[in-house]
Length: 478
Image (tube, rainbow, N blue to C red):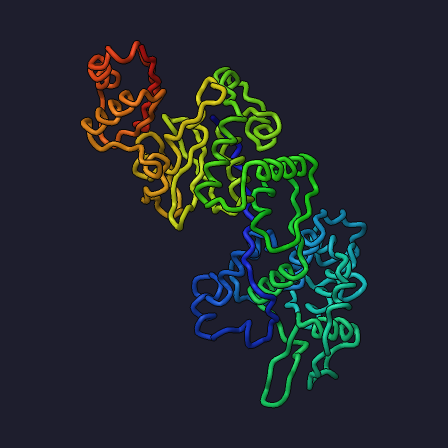
């Protein structure tokens, strides 16, 4: 069950677009000083910086010393990444290198795109702190080149009047005016005066938060593979699927849900319908697993939903996609069983968390039409009997939506077990499934005497059992 550990998370916090003033971004001096001592972001910026990280907006070198003034080179790097996430395209390779004081690839990319210019014909001043008017021009250029100029023009309001407007350089005046009219750049109040402070510098964290908030307003969530698709249902941004396989999976998943879900279904009902669909339409790729020849598709949602063959990762990712699209919170959990890598889901049903291992509920070899529920909404304690993992997710301790508890199919003692079997035989039930909540090491020896007592009524029986304590019987009557 080896699997590709390549989960990408693009969790976008749902926020209203909030414009930035100097006073908003500076927060309190005490917070900034405390954060500077540790190199971590100020308290006011922490969540948005984390969201910016997961959104792919922060270059690697800017993930520390958040209170340092941002340099021209550093913002060039941010601008290039902002262009990429806004367009879903890689920036082109640099066309020229006119600068003697830098050979930074992102700077040259930004220069080739037209986002930045030099401070002279052959200098860029990469280490110079970026000013607010330089920042405004670079942001405007980035948005315009990314195709957002129409929105900037169409969504602008009345431009504020800055008391220091004459201090804004002619080369940045249009950009400052348009960004201010869109509420992207704001000034700071000094009594009755509003000042833009064009030559003031900007810190790393201020710039990161500004870029992130621009992204939440102008960004698009681009799906470039099926792993991106796993998070598409949670996005507040427009979603554009650029990958053909991911598009096919998206269409298939929506068709599946349209066929198996009904409007009045509870979370539990939806989860159960998805669990049953996966068991009935996917077979574990056991032969390839045994021969160590598992093809790449068996690890994917595409292989699971389109081809009907998978190993644990394919099952878990497919469950994740369908559950999320059905409005159920679900998380991928990775760990091991008997020392072999394994993956499953942890879901939130009725406000509580449960473990769901679709793979281990699917019989191997595949048995058409057979459904089992030994690993449907089990607690951490129960799952730890054969699964090993470590995660930061909430603990799963609830039992109300465990399949067997919810359907009244649990027994707490051997006496209850015997009584339920005998009751089924008395009414000539074809089968019965029970989950033993007590330790039982006897196996068939535990129920063979029960069946012998009813030999006059039944001519034979068959049974299946699993490690979760579930045993199912089928009866043949005389």
